[in-house]
Image (cartoon, rainbow, N blue to C red):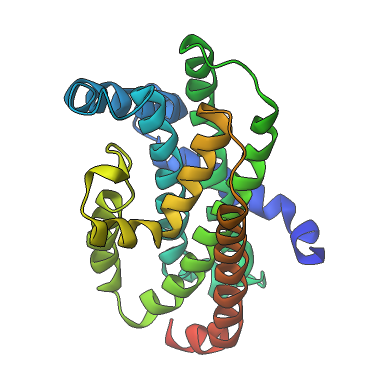
Length: 254
């Protein structure tokens, strides 16, 4: 926390640089963080809503809630994976903790998520979802999902320095994970063996928690609480420990 306070200005500047670079040639800029989930939701609703109309209540929100959390996890883990190599020159010239660059990527993904919420919250109201007490749990789910993605990103950032092909393998893995997260279909529609795989998917747990507290207004079960806490905290601690132990070796290789 002391390191975070000391270098908060650097994290903000790096975050601003990442956002400007991402939308450098776009007229709409960061508004794409609002429009993108809506466009994806529209396409998926047109394609799948009739297929699962009887099985999924309020399909557009069901899909969009899952998409936002999967996208946040993907953005955090993928962007953190390449952060050390992308900032090689700065790391060699400036005496700033390497973790600052990692946290800036995580903060960027968080900002994009908040912009996406500008599309999500009005859609909740337009869909007839009334404010409920369960919604106060949403920030907890969001923070734990960020921690999980950050923990995975720490490990990937070390692997990427020594094995660049991990970037392409992880892209394939994310595609597989997308279809194993029940974003646009009810889990009851797949065979029992596949259901077990999905139930053991941490990203699905964060989606399920968000759908319960935001869309359906139900309190998540104790088992679900335990899973999202364990996944988030354990992933972050393990990833950060590996990052700390390997950071000097990384600098030698860079």
